[in-house]
Image 1 (cartoon, rainbow, N blue to C red):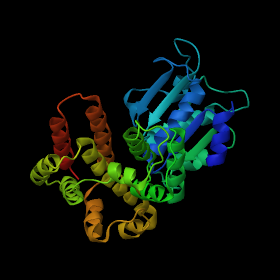
Image 2 (image 1 turned 30 degrees about the vertical axis):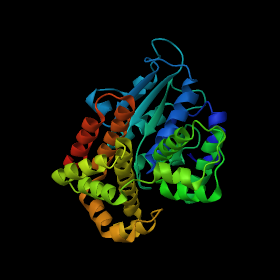
Image 3 (image 1 turned 90 degrees about the vertical axis):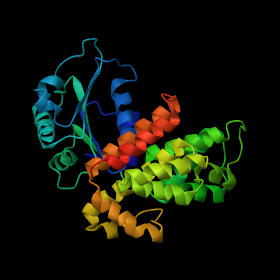
Image 4 (image 1 turned 180 degrees about the vertical axis):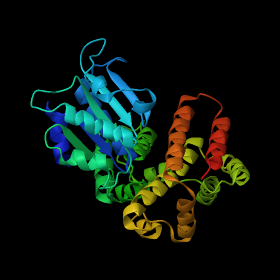
Length: 346
């Protein structure tokens, strides 16, 4: 059964005890992660240890010779609730999940372990998605698509209000239009904005605050650095990086600029499967691609694969964590990141 936003909120507040499989998928990977975490907390009741959850990647069931039905019927060594979490399932994983669904039939035949399947974009013809959407009693399906501009504005306003800050209407408009429609990036950007005014409790966020935090010093140089990275021009990227760092640009901001570009590419490439072309999918992107960059953006989408994009985005997230945790000299960390992104085979 497919749940809309309202039905999902109701389920998280009062979960149906008969439901034991959840498929969470979509192009907004930040939202996918957010909804997956919410389900884990509900099903494990915020009280779990290493024995209560088993995380598997796509193909692990076959590689590790795991029988999903047996695994779902097994109790935790420490007692209590238990959860299986499969990330990026392949075709065989989907078949195993549907087989498990058919094995646990009947009103009282509920497995010990519940199953969360976390996936990226899935077409309507996908067998796992199609069958779980038709299931009315044992499974739920949660689709996570990018928020529209009004949703982004509402989420920004709520997060700032929760932190004790109001925001001017023109500042909110600028903020919402400057953040890619991905929940993970939205939270990172708002955390940065909240930290910027941390010494001013209940400060009303103005356009000046937003520009100080999200606008990038030396936009032209940043764009050149982003383009050099995604086009695989490692030597050019290294030279541009030196200039950008000398101008005072923070390494974290550089990582986020590249991540934003990669996220927008991912969104367009995923939408192109339904729209029919990159150009058509680009026309739906909000905020729109700058006119002078459209040809380059389209070329970037044509030379990258979705899997390599996801690898680069994971690297972006890991590097930002390293930079925030001071796990090494920042020039070294950002230099290593730039080399890694520009070296990924497209």
